[in-house]
Length: 339
Image (cartoon, rainbow, N blue to C red):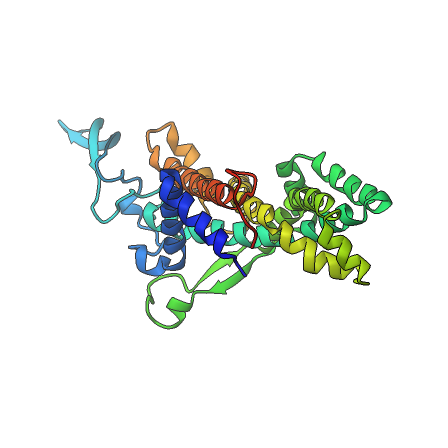
């Protein structure tokens, strides 16, 4: 149960911090876009309209050279002329090289990034927190063994380790039915979205170390507290003490770390999608990879708009994490609390 002091600190920090308001607004917008994608997206993100390909976003225009053959004085001559391509109000963010609506793809791409970010963070926490609590509480050989495993994991760059694990296990994906489409509320939209299971597992295995180190540090400081000693003197076992006393009082930095890790995993998932390891085509990283070949010819929006979505989501989540840290950290301004 969250204490009244925590709620008071959260409200106080939120009122005083404009960045916290900005971060929460960005996160809420992205979450709503992901959840209600069938109603927000104006077009099916997979529909291709080749006659409307490479349309610029609203407020921009594109000039390109087109070559045609014309009959002049009885001879066929090649004529090159500049044609101005204007934006279409039906495609606010323009279209990609296959005529797919960029706004719809960005909205649906938020689903993949957020689901992978949240599930990957939960998996990393479920592995790292128990490992860190056991290492910090028992110390000695247990601590040395577990932390050496963590050090070995940290020795490998996250992206390299993720690519290696995906190469070892392959790209497994699951089609998750869209409840709104299944219910007939948005029949023109995709009936399911692809959840890259392998990516979720890989990012969890890559990032568990950070939770382990934070949990270990908290366990080391809490194991010497008076209430822990009293519980041990009353005959409570180690597992009971960890679950009832150490974990609840160590949860604050774990929550803050979890918030930041969601942003880090979104970046990692986007990198894997960019490299073609995700297993889904509705992803911000995948769209950036598709759009990089068009940047040199002037169609900058195909890669830039998904990149902007990644940037805004990561900024929003990090600002939200800063707000939680300022409100929950008991070392700030002499106040704080724990969940």
